[in-house]
Image (tube, rainbow, N blue to C red; front, side, top):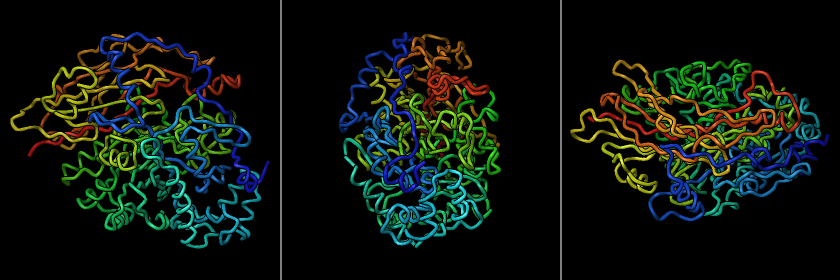
Length: 636
């Protein structure tokens, strides 16, 4: 096996299979019947014909898909795993170019519209020293020892001996850290690639990095994003700033210097109940000051990534039939992590309503985004049939993915390809994408490029017309996803009306249903929620309780990793009014669109390698999309 030095020079990481969508998926049958509530095919054609590379002048906005969470060789943990792709390689992969790894070509199944590299700030300086022969400290014994290691176990042992991990009581730099200038140099090199590959109107790169806070093993990581190239000299890490309050204060100082910046928390399922806390970092009850700062600095949260779905968990939501989705249960086998209901986004949003009642500000008013957290330098590689691992040598073979472990995190069989972010913006530029995220007009999908829209308002027309009429009316008379509703004078107890829309990925599976998820807090501070099926495929009926009365079915052939697109609908539209509305109670509403069943990545692996299916591992999944919520606030 080559040394890490050879891996770096040769651009090699691990021997994976080069493929776009698997032949089994490409040959899946299409042409499902349209149900009574499905949008006319003309709407789908109109939406798909709108160019994603030209600016929108109609006021309807374009949808853009991108990756917000990706690591290159500048992340020490990725490098230890054998990953040697540099920022330039990741950029080229995101744009649709083939990347050569160990003599094998890799290509994303569809290019991205925007992309952010989020290397760990904690060790960017150390990696600058390792990656550059002329860097100060490169000739030290520990660096040369690292470069000579050719075994993953030896590299992991070296890591433990030379790096004070960030989840220790006092996070520290690696033993060969030569100073902040090395961090500044590494940051400058990453940002140089970010600027070089930015192509306004066609491909947007967003300056970013990861602040990797893990106090006591709790995952409180944040990714930090900038609106332009007005940047700090170096990124501040968890070694520099050890609480979220310190991070926000630094960000506030940057804003005072004219820099535009926000943070996105991720992976709340591993936060040990601390992502949506009852106490601040000093152990005191949350204050209005804390709530205002968090509300201002953190407009969105990552709902899903490679280490699991953080929307809900079947243990805490047994009545949600779609809650058993990529729950990543083996996270609880590592670092003494245990899931609690407070680890999940749906519950966190309710706590936000509760704190707004108490403090006057919602600290958890989060829009929804998704990311992959891919540590192989391949952004947006979230297509199930094209998944060949995301954490270097830990999962670079089918056998490793079936039986291995991602160190300190989880069993590899519990991992998934990750998620992707969609934004509605007038054009594909840094400012427009950044602003859309800051304004929460975003959604996430578990991989497929499903397009979803959500509008809400009091007195919205029950007959908005075609797709364009729905969108225009939504903007003109209501608010889009991420917006806030207040009742107009004299509204009484009339509930708001919502427009919900979902369009399948042109290359993917049909849709099963659209759901509205409502959460609210009553006058006694009790949390409540209800899920409504508001549109279902193929004319299936919805009960008076708002639930589909028939399942969509399952066409997956697990032995061959095939499915047929003969069920479901290509698009779904609904106009829904909340008949259980109480004007006194704060609430949120978000859309969840569900696909028909398709093979899981592990099913594709088994079919490709002629391996037996694993007991207890789902052979099919129902991929999905989540919109950012629309919030309701009572009037004065």
